[in-house]
Image 1 (cartoon, rainbow, N blue to C red):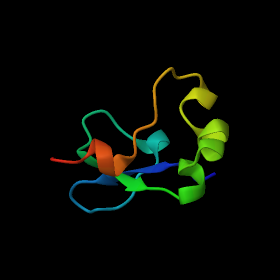
Image 2 (spheres, rainbow, N blue to C red; image 1 turned 45 degrees about the vertical axis):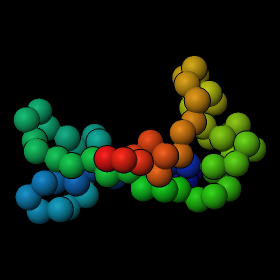
Image 3 (tube, one colour; image 1 turned 180 degrees about the vertical axis):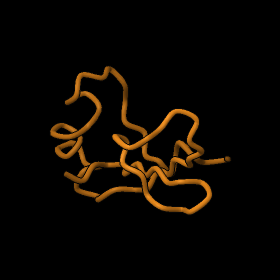
Image 4 (cartoon, rainbow, N blue to C red; image 1 turned 120 degrees about the vertical axis):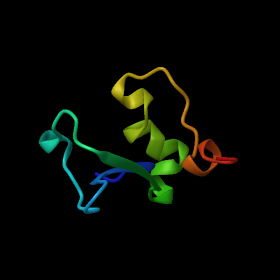
Length: 70
């Protein structure tokens, strides 16, 4: 299911995508955040797939705002 932010893990040397179940201790990776579909960034979308839906007591911040100034 798509979410407001997609998180992608890639091998730093090859750039190949890695599933979190295949990560090894000490493996060098890069983690990339990508803006998700607009529907999942709406109040309704966040209500069914956002942080609070999964029990986290944190507010959603769009990735472009979180990364501003970096």
